[in-house]
Image (cartoon, rainbow, N blue to C red; front, side, top):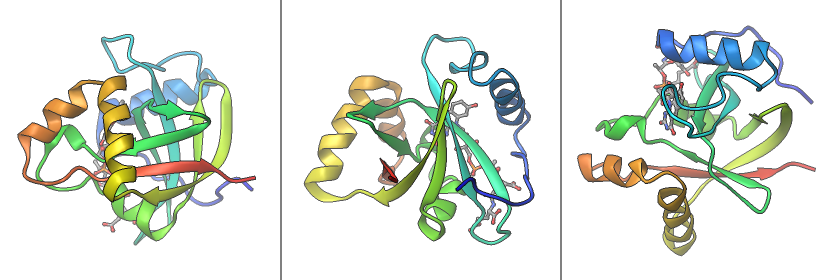
Length: 147
Ligand code: F42
């Protein structure tokens, strides 16, 4: 069941523009981190306070049909706001290229987190640099398909 509600675009222009181009082309364009060949996905999520629909591009980290959402925010000392949305409303929609499906987000910890963090850094090494920039442990959510 698609997430319904009023769409509230990101307040960051480059993010809002990437989402617009990605969705208008059904994932055929604007599907990499600008200036690189590194693939992204777009996650539709519900605002924890506003209840509005938010769309969050993230680097594509996938394994065996599940995806990872890495709340790195460039190594900032605070979590991205979407972290709170995923905690409050774990049912999200993830679009990878033309394919859009429903997933359930689960915050990882312990050995499971360590295993998936290793996969995230192996997929996109900049995550390792971001973690070195901050004392904050970068949260990661496992997104598992909802049947
Ligand atoms: N961010 C990452 O953290 N990791 C990535 O791998 C990543 C890759 C990436 C690739 C392409 C691209 O274009 C962007 C990429 N980003 C990545 C950036 C990511 O998409 C987000 O823009 C970034 O992580 C910051 O997320 P944010 O949720 O903090 O966004 C801010 C700027 C924002 O949109 N704030 C809104 C605002 O109005 O200022 C509020 C958003 C919101 O969700 N509000 C909640 C609500 O209720 O509506 C409130 C929630 C609460 O409890 O406060």
